[in-house]
Image (cartoon, rainbow, N blue to C red; front, top):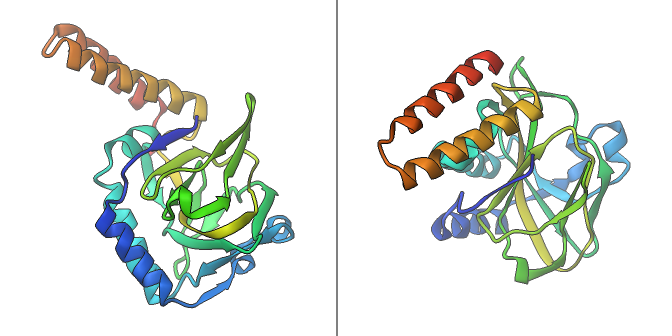
Amino acid sequence: MIVHVPNVLNSEQIARCREVMNRAAWVDGRVTAGYESGAVKNNRQLATDSPEARELGDMVVAALEHTPLFITAALPLRVFPPMFNRYEGGENFGAHLDNSLMQIPGTPYRIRTDISATLFLSAPEDYDGGELVIDDVYGEHAVKLPAGDMVVYPASTLHHVRPVTRGVRVASFFWVQSMVRDDGQRTLLFDLDMAIHKLNQSLPHHTAVVEITHCYHNLLRRFAEV
């Protein structure tokens, strides 16, 4: 399931991100890549232990807590601390698969990467190329979103970032361990929750809304791992 989550960050938050990133030091993106992905990764990122990365990561996590569509789509149990990358001058990231388990920096804890997320911080008109391309059973999906918008998608999918041929593309990326690890089950719950919202708007306080919500939560009880 690929979901576009609009307006995760507002214009003031995006401006703050750019201000901080403009004065930050960038390191080779391969420092956090696995063996296979390191061979095809050509970008830069903020050092994960830098004060800039921590400040902006805290901002993103706080914003996610107030983004209902993200909560509905991801059903998050744990969120990996957001990271930040930069592409320019032909930099790209070839086809790769994200690691299934990630060690949280500075801790003994790991998360299972059920969901990958990319939060765009550059306006699409500010750069050429740089599309995130996600492969699933229906083919390739090229994603290039407004600044402040995010895409979430199964971490099990093959994906790549096309070369940036003009301008600069900056983004935040991170992973989510969901309460529901199976993408098919998450999709079912997401579709059902969206239908409940639509029904509640059309028929507020109708008993059918309560009945379907009851089914949703019983399915969540069956599927969730907490």
